[in-house]
Image 1 (cartoon, helix red, strand yellow):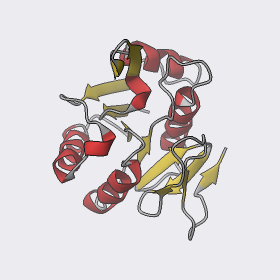
Image 2 (image 1 turned 135 degrees about the vertical axis):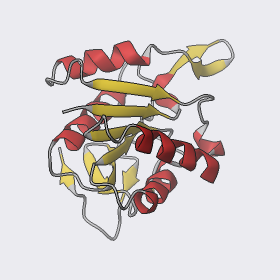
Image 3 (image 1 turned 60 degrees about the vertical axis):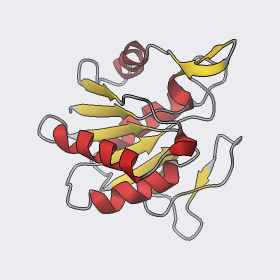
Length: 178
């Protein structure tokens, strides 16, 4: 299984600085560490958007960048993960679900409430959950993995900026629970 990860931005890859959070985590090394325990070592490719997107400023042009990255890697990858900020991740997953409706490969969006370097962060659980969903053979289309739940990409909504279960799909049952 070959997985392509698009890092669009968001809290997950940020580090603390005197000026607040800023990009700076060694995301490629961290991803390799995460996948070594689930049999995916050496099968991950990564694109980091430039510039990284602040989720609160996301607009359709950013969605297009993500779509283009996924399409550019469609021959080399069996599944896709998009690491995204939580402010607009539900909007992005809905937009991608319509733009990529012709894709046969799963696309799973995820992020975190706290950066990966913070004690107690949900980054590891969300990323490994998204990887497992993408590799399961059960995920179809675009979905959003967050807080141990896989949600349909065009049915997800953000329900909390603080809770580790920050997303829900009120009118549709989760696709999977972990």
